View: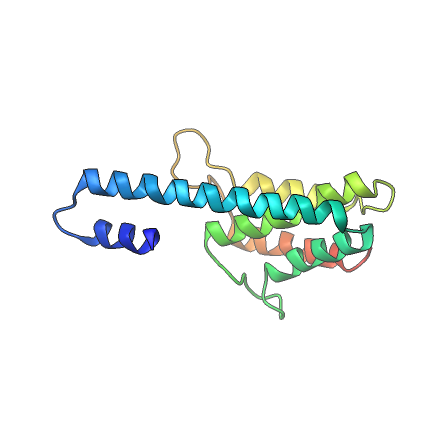
Length: 151
């Protein structure tokens, strides 16, 4: 598998930069092909079975709930990547929900999504989010989770 090959090449010492670049390009092409295949299938499926507003609301709720543990005390994935993926998933469903059912979407959720998103970017000149407060992010996800329960 291309991923395994790339990992193996990256762990070798000394590293063969040409082989790494070639393998990374092969992996990128493979993933691009797979992504196109999945997108085509999803597009085809969405034309035959589009989500209802209720299904979208439920998926938004699932994305919001899955970000934190059931007891609400911590993130399932406490690193930036995990938190960002949960945010992006919830945000995607929230904005699709508005496109499908603008009057039914809970507008009270939008400010919380905006606050979460504001914690996640890397400002110019930084290699991590500036001023990210894990406790505040957790509290915002708790609010998002609570909002997801009240359609």
